[in-house]
Image 1 (cartoon, helix red, strand yellow):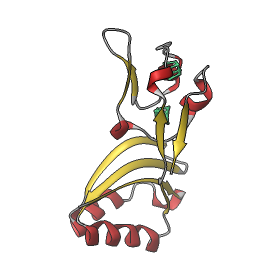
Image 2 (image 1 turned 90 degrees about the horizontal axis):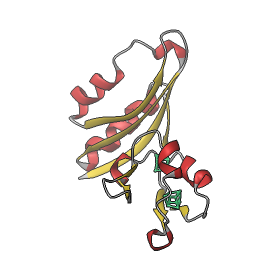
Image 3 (image 1 turned 120 degrees about the vertical axis):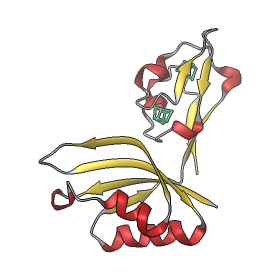
Amino acid sequence: MKKVKVKLHFPRKWLGRPLISELITKYGIVFNILHADISYDSEGTLIAEISGDDDSVNNALAYIDSVDVKYKLYNKSIIIREEECIDCGACTAVCPSEALTMDSNNKLRFDKEKCLVCELCIKACPLKIISTEF
Ligand code: SF4
Ligand code: SF4
């Protein structure tokens, strides 16, 4: 089983074409969209998690490569020095995917699966206790 997080950049000519359903049908992968920024008449960006057996994921990435859709793999992840966190919530205010939220006790919660590695929280934290690791 392989799971990768990718950022896809669709050129204008690809908008409206069913790349994702093609990938699912051809390779039997699970395609989980985490964030999308696509408008009808311009280029689009999609952040997604692709999972499946190793060959299926590799073949799906090779197919994306072959059809002129650029992609970037996310190899980084966010780490938070939780013992130093003061639960101020500043990072939750900028997080676009709700990976960072405050729970009912006003404690910070981090859901790694939802993280887009956009790094906005790094800049927002007043204590500078959020960073990336490779
Ligand atoms: S990098 Fe930070 S702000 Fe961006 S999605 Fe992940 S947790 Fe949220
Ligand atoms: S911004 Fe920093 S100190 Fe504030 S809740 Fe987020 S991680 Fe904790």
